Length: 424
Image (cartoon, one colour):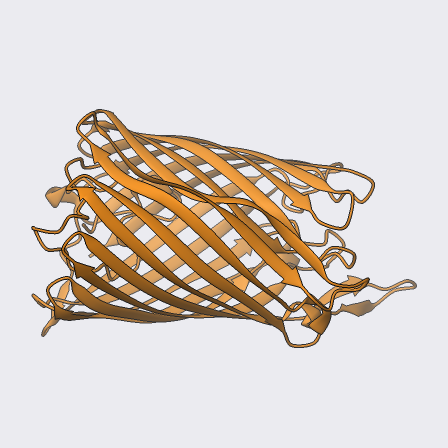
């Protein structure tokens, strides 16, 4: 579905960039499409027609957004507010074939602050992806994506003393293979990520600036895994998965690590208007060369999502995740990030969509006395005027409270954004 949408309203962002999903056979035991969520529901009168280019279709889109942020530096006191103007051009190119698929996409975000031009920045993404349908139930897909990004001031790693947000590039490559044997499905997955951070600037004593070195954060992460699903019925399948995780730094070799994540779970779609995927597992990351000797970060892991459809016009989505993330502080090699959220999407009218979300999170740092608690909320409304024009309004609330002897920054941030999206 290609609904007119904007990044301002994630709840109605459909097909912003081509996501190559594996072709599904009507007889598969792993199809979960009895219910249609508000985000997935087709709206032919509001979908982009696209521009025909032979065997391909192009989908251009332009979003113009104004956002009021009451704490642009994400600090606890002496908050600074500003209005940010954004222009977001996007172009997606997709094949229109009965089998196999190829796509490419490009997007950018030009961000300008009304009163604080040191915060001005640009971000962009370029990518290609594809899928090869070998035989029924067997396919191979892959993608390659390059991004030039800005680290948000609200990120746990962001230093409030930096004169401008930290820039970094991210190169992501993915290869995935799927094979079905009647009730058994085997999936192999390989993902590589290369992070390259640019140095920042700090104000120097006595005037001028000094370099804020960020090269120690440059790294390559490779995640590889194998998953086996077994369908006990057309609506329910149990699975086990084992994933390896290798992290290698360009300079700070003491942060190199290897780990794994072993999980078991179930994915389902019940007649009582509920579907989802729930799992639980054990994760471990070992840092052999960390200062003070080998150190492990381990614990319970999950990546679960459940959708509830109380009515055909309302979708309630629950998400939960727990993973090991890399830390920037010198005495800690990593932290366990636990996150949960509940979101409600409601179709007030065919072309008026309302959304609300509440989120909670906690980051527990290993090796130091620090725990960051995060609370968030979002309200949004989308008015789809026709297949080419849409108007969006979003309010976002974020609060972070850092505790412990080695605590970091705490802050509260409120954002109100209005945007107009054009697509063809």
